[in-house]
Length: 343
Image (cartoon, rainbow, N blue to C red; front, side, top):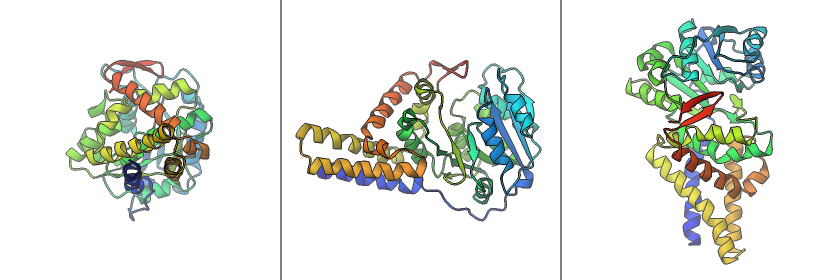
């Protein structure tokens, strides 16, 4: 049993390459023809950090568009004050989600040949835009944001972030950050083709590939960061519930099997320690697992050292919320004041 668990632990290292940031490919993408599109619904607290990070970049985009998705706060005023062009969203049509409708309108209004879609809770690191553009060659390109973790409950996102990164890099797309040329965007049908999807990035990646458009992604440490669900545990649970199980279903089969095997090994180590009381063999196995989780976690976010040491807590949380997401698939969930149907 001990050797079996260690084999599952070792399988986790097959995921390591997916958690590393990749260098640029010498692409010729220029910020001078780049339109940044930011869908925003009640984002007055998040927008300043993103817009100020864009203003501080060594590479400056042609334009920054904030699509105000029926916000009830000062989203539009804040965006204007910080130099963005504000587009007020038209009423949400039937069959559309707020984000996809906002992105669609932003793409139509944009004048650049390149479109960079950024969620309002992201921000670019110093020279991050230049690094992002240097990694772009053609087609659709995405970077998984580095997760800023400020409050202890946010550490519970650890295994969601690990799974999201492992399941997306290098041939998927991340929802918060997507760079694509206008022609490729049109060939795949743009956001209109995924208008009702919660995980529009997952479905767009498939449509791009079907249209013959190259799709590539990398871990985004040093390029782009975000802070997920800063408004409490309830928001965190609701956010991960709304479509994570569906997204996991789109993960490549081989990667999914490795991830599942690895997480089984992580759970077996503490369970066998408790069952046998053998602190030498199973205590050592547990510490090896904790060290590995800690090493992986620092590549994707600012997770605390004790989160890795106590990794069974976020792992059980992951299994619980994942099951909740699977059970709620296809059912209405509430998000940002709207009722949406989970993917």
